[in-house]
Length: 145
Image (cartoon, one colour):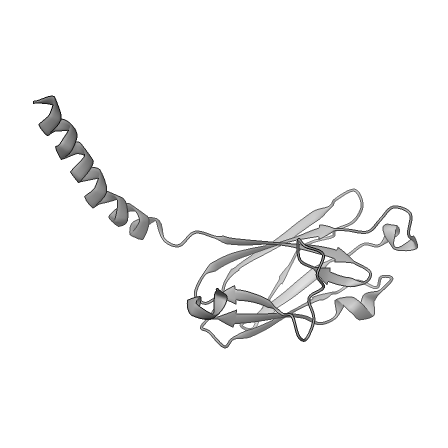
C-alpha cells in the first residue's frame, strides 16, 4: 500500500512539475558587469567592446547589475556613474553608482533575436569616452551557447 502511494505521489510530481515551471514563466537572466574608467568588464575581467558585445537570449527577462570597480588608489575612485540602457525606445537608468553605493541595476525583457541595445554613462566622469558605447546584442538560444 505504501509503495503504491509513494509511486502515485512520485508520478503526480513528475507530471505537475513541468506545468508549474511553465506557469511560473521564464526565470530572470542576471548579468554582472564591472564599471571602471577603462570601460565595462565581464566577471572574468574581459572588456566588452565592438568585437565582444554582451549577448543576451531573446524574449527573456534580464537584470543587468552594474558594479563600481574603481581601485581606491586611482583618481577615478571619486567617479560617479549613472548607466542608461536604451531598449526598444525606452531608457532604463541604474541611478548613481559610486564608491559608497557600489551597485545599480536595470531590468527589462529582451526583444527578438537580432535586436541591438546600447548602454552609456550619462554623467561626466574620468574615462567617460570608454563608457559611451556599451553594446548589447540579442541572440537566439542556439547562438547564446
